[in-house]
Length: 158
Image (tube, rainbow, N blue to C red; front, side, top):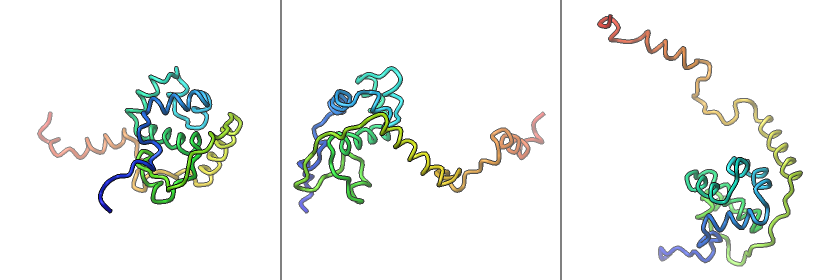
């Protein structure tokens, strides 16, 4: 490998966030974007400018919108396991794959997808997604009292 990056197979190369947002908002609208992505900037007082500002500051949301653009709007085949590990801006599509027509999305489909995700989450259990070492049994108030009780300087304070 010669070390050069081939941007020819990167569908997001040269596409600004504003252009990307304009294309998907013109095609789907803010209501569909909020229904599928569940990002509040598409629901509360939505505009291209405010959404762009939020997405520039918030990496997880920008990556979610870019993935939506690639796999719903451009209708590209799903990324391989190796490519999926990369952020959407760094992904490269295989030679010969071309974008298709934008997927037809509806609010009813979004609701079905949301229900499916909720069932999947419920099946995982209440502790799914929590860190293994997080101690939720001790409240912040009781932690504070523990720290005050073990104050090594207590005997010097009046």
